[in-house]
Image (cartoon, rainbow over all chains, first blue to last red; front, side, top):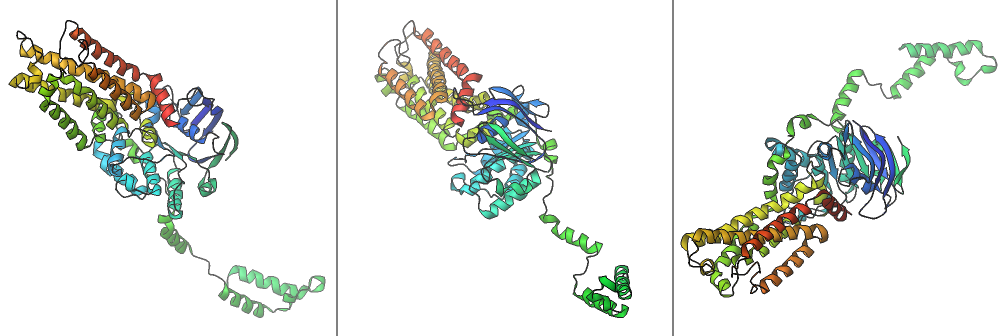
Length: 212
Length: 299
């Protein structure tokens, strides 16, 4: 399965496009998206997550077109946004169970699956507003993993992590990228470059350099 | 002696025989000396691991190596019908406190029924604050990362928005039936009997009261959703509350939705309010409207 962007243009509201004619094709592996702030990394990931429909061009995952069949497309993906969850009076396990239901995890599997992803990211249950920023970062990662996605999109996953958490994240990404596409937007590519299959440098809304 | 060592000794001793311009320091060794030197060197070298030792080392390190993820879960743990439980999953957002507070508000209104009637207010005046509070409670957490996470699930933005508003809407509708039922069964509270002409059967009165309640509920639900998608939940709640207060203040007008005096145009007006509410809900859930909402909230 490959993620393909074909001449994708995208932006917010009536504003100027953030992505302009972006094209690339990625196979399974760990891919880093780097670039200066405002270059379009987050917009690229939102487009790939099907949250921000492109103004022009096509986003495809294998044979599934993100615009023509958005539900089938989202079925395959897991997305961890850059922003952290701010949900007062909500416990992590309850929230993940709710998301698992939205992601189509069968009721009989939900409890086990939530426990498995929490274990995978090294998180124990607790009130989300009592979590540290590093724990909240791991919580959005756990949310992205709930449906065992074919395409995993992580926006700045290294932010707020301490060195030990960073090592765990590296190992987890190495494990996950063995048989799926993991696309990571980051300002700190050095932290994850060890196991990366390649890197896309984004400048002014387009891929200015690609290294495999 | 290994075969490599024997070759090396042969090479070193053969240089002794040739001598000449290529003569070096080590060329003066006899075969026995060379063997002794090599044996001593072998004692200082790190021993080459055997195949079994290498395998044992790999086995010890294996837990630390990155492993391919077990992908069995995708094939067995996912169901292609997440919408079957969609509405039920929305209940997650509503804490017991909200259910109880809403019920308490209606019971309080029921208790204050005669007071409302004295002021010429219909029980429908309680519906807007109830649904405004419900939508505010339901949507206030749907922002930032939570919104992005939900929208990356295999559901449409319309389903996300509809799911959030449906629970408070249905609950408020059921709550509206409480004072109506209580009134028709017991013919008790003055609020229910006050506007009734003497010839009107209590069942028809109940339907009219419920129609008034439902019209106010749907109108303000549609308004809240539309304003929420445009301006955010708190601004929407503020604007809707201001409109509710204004309409309640004008209740002495015969056509006010909260007036007790049921003129000839009262029923068509309530049906109109109900229809307008439904249209507002449908318009708010249109794809392009939601797309702008997603873009604005996600920016």
